[in-house]
Amino acid sequence: MNIHEYQAKALLRSYGAPVSDGRAVFRAEEAKTAAGELDGPLWVVKAQIHAGGRGKGSFKEGDAGDKGGVRLAKSVQEAADEAKKMLGRTLVTHQTGPAGKQVNRIYIEDGSGIETELYLALLVDRVTSRISFVASTEGGMDIEEVAASTPEKILSFAVDPATGYQPFHGRRIAFSLGLQGPAIKQCVKLMGILYNMFVERDMEMLEINPLIVTDKGDLKCLDAKMGFDSNALYRQPDIFALRDESEEDPKELAASKYDLNYIALDGEIGCMVNGAGLAMATMDIIKLYGAEPANFLDVGGGATKEKVTEAFKIITSDHNVKGILVNIFGGIMRCDVIAEGVIAAVKEVGLTVPLVVRLEGTNVEKGKEIIRNSGLDVIAADDLKDGAKKIVKAVKG
Ligand code: GDP
Ligand code: MN
Image (tube, rainbow, N blue to C red; front, top):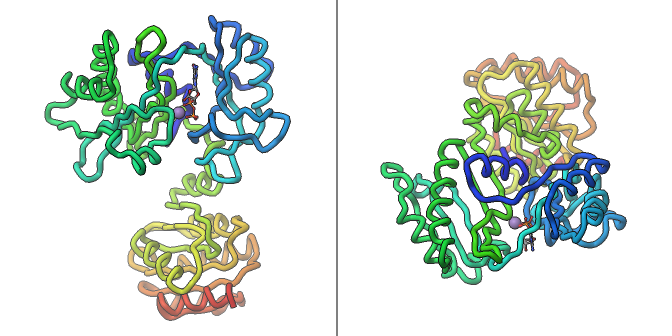
């Protein structure tokens, strides 16, 4: 789960990390008061969406102005005006995809004078199973681009969990970033704060881009992106409370309510499968026969008829779906339950695209009989290969 920049900065502040003073704004009327509470003489007005690259992004609608999602203002009035222009508009960045994201919240910050922009991140390194620091002098830029063109400018190392964070880790980062004077000590302290926060709050990713040296020579977190391990949210209630459902794919949100493992994709074949492995295999074979999956959907082992019905509704609500492949191996899951769920869903929402069903395993005969007797226009398949061929043919001709 991700949170907004202003929420991440509040968390940073609570741990004693240096961030600017700022105010979150939800309605245009609040903007002027919020900006007035900050010192100036520079204000930064920042669109709050769960995507980076806001500064270089652009708004879909002309009346938001053509300045991107991070704007500098020289007065309270100007800051309030910029906030008003952005609220409710759709911001497109290289991370949002072409559809962009609607801006429903704005963060107004006391502007900083910048000496240098640096890059810093913490993440869980799957190779070493440890938390790694990533630091670079190339701040404010896309780190992927830095990694591709000048990888020598990136320092990365893992921290041994047995010792945890040690001051030498922080000094290593400080020297690689070329810090001087008080910023070195500040760096050693800040890296310790970030590491402890990362562990304590079950983070998956923490990116400060840019981390800056201010014109007064101090370190400061100018941007903050945080991702949390969803499986740990049960023990992080105050983090979970920061969830912004408007940032999530509505189909994925509906799926999470029914405890379905659903991920929206770009293809045309909707898949309903049980088991993550079978779901992967199903997606692979759809690609093999020349089409693309519209989603990953694992209904899980012990799905009920209601859950299957919901899953089917989520798939059919996707307008990109031109055909559906149901591929179930009944182990714990019984084929007749799947059949009943599919039929209940089709009766409720109708069926406007071809549907191929492949059932195997527990109660398979009963399941097939339910589908046969339903009078629905379902294409039966014998195995995975047959199912994939049939749905691709039905969609692509
Ligand atoms: P992003 O584009 O979504 O990554 O948003 P950032 O918060 O990283 O802001 C983008 C850029 O705006 C930064 O790299 C800075 O160059 C600039 N910026 C952000 N805040 C300030 C500030 O307080 N003062 C100044 N001078 N520039 C800022
Ligand atoms: Mn940034």
